[in-house]
Image 1 (tube, one colour):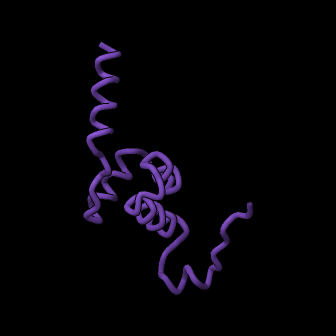
Image 2 (cartoon, one colour):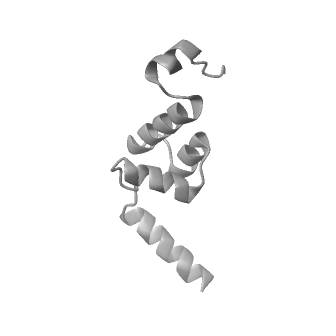
Amino acid sequence: MKDLVIPKSILEELRQNKSELLLELAVYLYDKEQLTMGRAKKMAGLTQVEFQKELSKKGIFIKYDIEDFEADLETIKRLS
């Protein structure tokens, strides 16, 4: 598999640097449920809290459904 290469001219046209574009792509893929939070934050090169702040700035909600909640409850029960 090859790495994705984005020509400098395109970055200049978009007025974004590599980090900004990676963040935009990571946020988009997370929002479309193509990447998990863990994979998206890693792609963006951010910590969990930093990535969540970026999601908040863009009005994107954290993906957390009933199955996630039930799994968290089970983990808490196991750890207590």
